[in-house]
Structures are given as C-alpha cells and as structure tokens.
Image 1: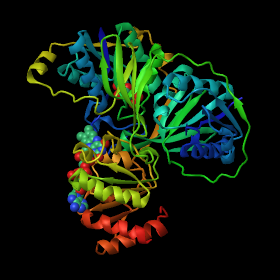
Image 2: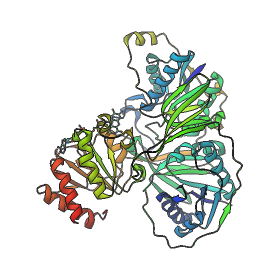
Image 3: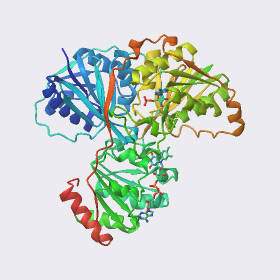
Length: 318
Length: 257
Ligand SMILES: Cc1cc2nc3c(=O)[nH]c(=O)nc-3n(C[C@H](O)[C@H](O)[C@H](O)COP(=O)(O)OP(=O)(O)OC[C@H]3O[C@@H](n4cnc5c(N)ncnc54)[C@H](O)[C@@H]3O)c2cc1C
Ligand SMILES: Nc1ncnc2c1ncn2[C@@H]1O[C@H](COP(=O)(O)O)[C@@H](O)[C@H]1O
C-alpha cells in the first residue's frame, strides 16, 4: 500500500488553516498520481471532519500532546507513516514541521523537501517548487527515496471549499517515548493576533515611524481596520518600535499573506526575503524610487502620517 | 569538553540576483562571494562563550569544497580553536548530516551548535538530522542558552510568538536564532593568532561514510529567478483620494478585502 499522508496541525482541537489547504491539494495530486489521501493528526482533534476537503481516510495518534515535544511528535509521525504506508507526506512548514520532521526523515532514510510553495504531479512523480537563497532563486525538487516528506509554506494554495463527507478515523498505536527535554516555562504573547507566518493580511511598519508610540498610534490601528496582523522591518525592531517576534525578513519571519501592506519600509533585499511571495503587495512610501515600489501591485507615494489615517478612514467608510 | 560548531559557507546575502549554470542545475558560484552562514555566527559565538565559561576546545566543522574550507578559517579569529573541513560536495541535507554526525562521533563532541537555517538551501533540516543520527535530543530556534557543563537551559521560539524555556542534559544539538548573542568582532591580535591554528581536511572515506550513504535522495533542478510580478501602479491624488481608491482596488480588483 502506498499513499499520501497529510499532517493536520491544530491548536487545542481547532485545525489550523493549513490543514484544509493541504488536504485539498493532496486530493488533487492524489487524483493525478493514483494515490489515496489519508489525513493524520496528533492529539485530540476531529480529524475525520477533514474528509470534507477530499481525504479518503483519517488516522490519529491519541494521547497527551498538550505540550510540544520534538521526540513525541517525531515518533507519532513515524508511526502514522508506517501505519498508512505513505510514500508522500505533506505537512505545514510550521515550527513542528521544521523541528521534528527532519528527524523523521533521517530515521526513515526519507527525502526531506522544506518550505515548498508549489507541488505538481509530473510524469507520475511529485515535483515541488520551492524558494532558495532567501527567495532569490526557485528550484524544482524531486525525491528518489521510497518516502518523501514535503513541508509547505502556509497560504501557498489558499482556502478550499469543503463539501465532501466526514470520514472514519483509525487510531494508530504509539508508545510514548521518554523525552529528555523538559519544558519548564511557556511564555504566551499578550496579543492574540494570528501568527504572522499564517496570516492572510499583514501591515508592516518601518524605521520611518520614528518611535514606539507612533508605531502603536499609526500602524496598529491600520492593522485593526484591515483585520491584519502587524509586522515590522528589522530597523523598526532594532529601534524597539515593535517586538522581535514581529520582524519580517531574512532574519525574521517568512510570511506569505494574500495582502502585505509595507508602510514606510524601503524594501531592502533582506526584508523582501521574508515577504516577496505575498500575493498583493501595497507600498506606502514618500520615495517613489524606494525598492519596495518595484514589488508593489499598488503604491501610494506620500507621507505615511497623512496616508495611513486617511486609509483607516476609507476602510471605515467602505 | 569538546564543543562542536557547524559552519556552512553560503553566498553573501546582499547579492540581489544570481546567474545559473548552463543546465540551470545550480547557481554560478564563480559570480558569488561566499561567507559564513549568518546564523552560524551566533552558533560560533555561543560555542566560544561556553568554552570561556567551562574550558574545553571549540572545533568548527564544515562540509563543502575548497571554498568552504576557506570560509571556515574566518571562524578561527572569533573563538574557534580548530577547524575540520570535510572535503565533499553538499548534495542533500541527509548526506551532509551523515558526514557531520560522523565527525561529531569521531571527535567525541559533548555539545553541537548549529545555525537555525542555512541561507542557501533554506532547509532547516541538517541539525535535527544530525541529532537523530547521533541519538541526541535537539532544541531548535534557540534565543537563550546557558549550561553548567552537564545540564543546560534554553529558550526556543516555537511559533505564534510563544517562547518556551526547556532544560535537559548534554549532549544536545542546539540551533541558533538571531538574538541568541551578539557575535564578537575580529581583533587584530586574534587574526594573527588564527594564522597558527589548524584546519584539518578529512574525506568521507576516512570518516567511514560510504558512497551509498552520500547518494542524494533529493535532487534540485530548473533553477530560476523568482516569478516576475506584473508591473504595479502608483495611485494618484491627495491622501484621502488615494486612500479611497486603494480600498476600492483592493476590494474590487485584487479581491483581498
Ligand atoms: C544579515 C542581515 C539581515 C537582515 N535581516 C533583515 C530582516 O529580517 N528584516 C528586515 O526588515 N531587514 C533586515 N535587514 C536590514 C535591511 O538591510 C534594512 O536595513 C531594513 O530592512 C531597513 O528597514 P526600513 O525599511 O524600515 O528602514 P529604511 O531602509 O530606513 O527605510 C525607511 C523608508 O521609509 C520611507 N519614509 C521615511 N519617512 C516616511 C514618511 N513620513 N512617509 C512615508 N515614507 C517614509 C523612506 O523613503 C524609506 O524608503 C538585514 C540586514 C542584514 C545585513
Ligand atoms: N555543509 C554544511 N557544513 C556545515 N554545517 C552545515 C552544513 N549544512 C548545514 N549545516 C548546519 O546546519 C544548519 C542548518 O542548515 P540547513 O539545514 O541546510 O538549513 C546550518 O546553519 C549549519 O550550522
């Protein structure tokens, strides 16, 4: 038996957007490749419901997975791959995807292809397109081993329409392993906004904001008006206008939203590295020759301290 | 204790555009300046600080061609005592991990520091693979690290802005995130002292890694620039007009609102 296994991530039983996105993509690839699609999850989540997006079967490793453990995750994934007889594994390029899945690949001698932005069936095989060199080049990746593990950048395919039927869930046995790493503290951020890497809309501010107060007074209300998550350039983070976790770019987060609004950000190559795959980029900048302009679908040339409040107004009217 | 640190030679991140080999199966390296992978600088600094606190020897390891060996030398002026250059082509993450794990075993490292990602292949895979092959735990995307020489405490950024503090016992593989530390600058005295330090060259055979173990299971082809974007447009008018027009375009044309 061989097939596609999709790893569905959830937060306390609520599936992340990537779950439906990857199941739907797997269903269309499975149809071309002649492979069944099984969706699998770890912990307590209604994985059978993802049949709605085209999975034929569902598997689950139950148990206490409340606190993240690298070795438990790796062990549970390996058990599901074995139970399903998967030749292709699709997973989100999340923290767990980056942290635990390379271990699984090394354990099984599998090919590991990270951070794919496109997947296609080509001559009976799966071919992944992915960025390299901070997005300055793209390559095709192919796996020659019996098992290929592919992590996919969130929002690469967009939200699918559900409509299929719920499928039955098979429990996969997994004997918990002793993890020599103990979590002693977990610090959750105050803001409950969507994780930048999964956000559909992002508003980022740069050095030009000039102070933390002005960043909070100008950028955050625009974020709220757009229903967007707030990001920042490194210059803004280094100046403490925004926390480090909000940095977008080569040394910050890699994001892939539908809408990215860059406010007073020049568009340095290291910033572009983190956001250039965004579907629609908007630039607000007083310099018509700033590098970000070349990447923007829409640009407003002007003083951000006038344009942003006007934009918040226009969004309220609309 | 021997403190290991993985260092990869990667293209300078200031490069804006690559040229490709004739078959588009790689970048044209002749056009490119290589340096230490930025995240590995944090790994090197953490290794140097651990030695300063607890003694031992810092050994930096790279897998790559002669150019990689040259880049490795740069670390000898910022706290590394000795280099090991595995003379082999980087094919895929697993093959590279097998070589690095073999060096860790033969050197008898008590801890191994790596970067969270190499800015060329962007895989974030090799360190976890090395840990798996060694049977060690690993902690990735680490923003703070301390050790008493036997146990350690590390902070990791697990996504969604959540920071976790974890503890465990050495040996462990750690992957460095920006902010872990502030890497030191080369001082003239250290640059002079580095000239006397040794980079040993080893082959896969001498490490007992066979050609079969190095055969890649992932292959890359069709290298190309990022897809072109359609030319954008500047929205005219004063702030209020432009803002209203932008909202209309985002809603009716781009359909993102
Ligand atoms: C190894 C390395 C890694 C890096 N990693 C990152 C990274 O991850 N992320 C990142 O962002 N950067 C990164 N950088 C830094 C990057 O090179 C730039 O320095 C940084 O992105 C600049 O931030 P900025 O656009 O906010 O500031 P600036 O480059 O100073 O740009 C400010 C912009 O605001 C505009 N402006 C000023 N005032 C106004 C106004 N009133 N109204 C409208 N527009 C205005 C200006 O025209 C200008 O375009 C990295 C650099 C290095 C060397
Ligand atoms: N060829 C290599 N030589 C030495 N270290 C490497 C090599 N490849 C990867 N590494 C280490 O593994 C980290 C992550 O690399 P990667 O998995 O390729 O993104 C790097 O920051 C290095 O510390």
